[in-house]
Image (cartoon, rainbow, N blue to C red):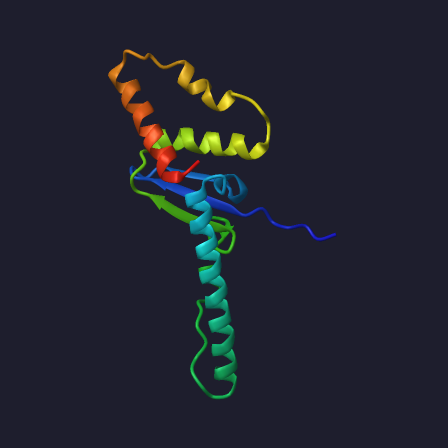
Length: 144
């Protein structure tokens, strides 16, 4: 039996907060799923191009495309496992709520725990109203 390594994605907010979550959870957002599929297709095409470049190099043609061993590891995660997606229109506190929702949704548990953060909000508070508005806009943008 082969064990498949868990793939992760890093979502980065406009204020540089970073959230790492399993790729399956991130793909609960249609927009992120489309981006991941596009990146996978690009990586596949690049690998095919590099392979053909290596064949050309063996025949005395162009040099192969690619970096050294240092380009394969960043912060303990291999680059083929970690995708970084900047979300410049979403703030850190809002993205934290979205990430929590995506992870809960992917788990398949039918709970309302992803909405508990909203229960503690004051409907008369301007800051809480702003946060809910930003959350709605983020959910619409991410299509989740």
